[in-house]
Length: 105
Image 1 (cartoon, rainbow, N blue to C red):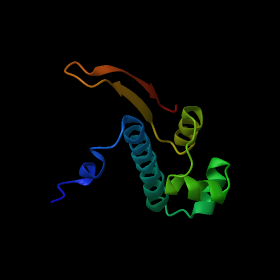
Image 2 (cartoon, one colour):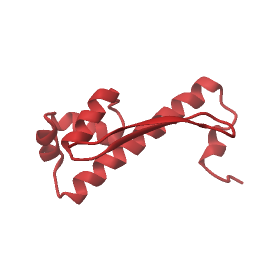
Image 3 (cartoon, rainbow, N blue to C red):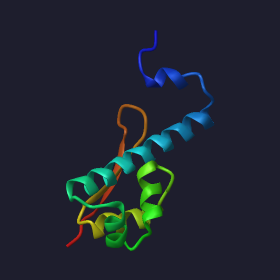
Image 4 (spheres, helix red, strand yellow):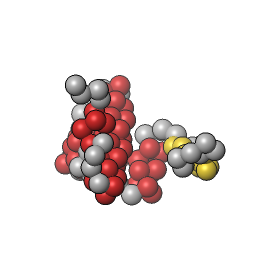
C-alpha cells in the first residue's frame, strides 16, 4: 500500500532525489505566484506587465518550467511588495545554519 508521495521515490539514486527536490521547490514557487495573481485578480499578462516579463515567462513560472536566479526572484518579490526570507538548514539536530531577509522599504 502506498503511504505517501515520498514512497514513489524512496529507492531512487541521490541525483534523482536531488532533482525531485528541486522540482518540488519550483512547484512551491509556482504556487506563490499563482496565489498572488488570483488574490490580486490579475491575468498572467497583467502580472507579466507588472514584473516586466512576457506572459509566456509567467506561464512557465506558474508551471514550474522557469527557474529564476535568486536575484531575479528577489526582484520579482520586491516588485510585488512581498518579503523574502531565505533560511538554510542542514540535516541533523542543530540544523539551523542561518538566514537572510530582504524586505522592501
